[in-house]
Length: 292
Image 1 (cartoon, rainbow, N blue to C red):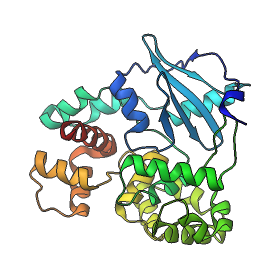
Image 2: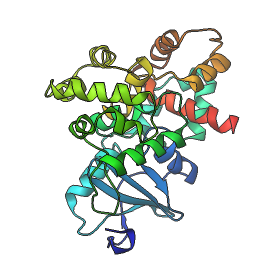
Image 3: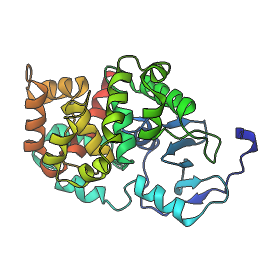
């Protein structure tokens, strides 16, 4: 099913109170939360689970299109993916920007940025591919993995493979997608999940600290990957992922030079509170903008 053979629905309003700037719109989809969106010029095309959609920004707001036949269930899934049930204005107001000028500036610059709510198991898979890789490289690995081992879905693209499909593919086949040593961790995780039915669903439902302690037991999952998975795949907004960008950011803006990642993560959760993950994302985004 080639791209030219796919019939897409007419553009429709997303019916979501979201009127971001172009920079914020682009950053939400391609700023390191998710890795299956690609810019097609006038719109973005994304895939998650078995859904394929297009989004575009207009003067009226965000519009969407999907492979025909489009339906309400697809729209509902898209709204969940975009965290439509979360009021990010309330979250912003609850953060300590009144006493933190660094945070205040970042929030103003990136007003309207959303935290995506992706499928939990899929988020785990993508972030297991992320170690020491740039966003563009992670996206390429995920795309190759989808094409090699995932099913073709409506829209002409492939979904990511399920954990069962990863197990059946084997480690050597995974290495063929360019993920290198990460293939071992991903296949070992698939083998664990094969014998622990319902484990992902159980962990996703746990409180943040308990969920994180379970995730770091998986091969290749450290605190940073666990926090990313919980923030972007489980909606646990208290998670505060710490990578090299955040280490640099917190050292520069909060005088945390020389602090270890776990110390910075603890500081972030204590300083920013129950929505620390949202503060992390706007600060992460702002530092990347400054550094070019």
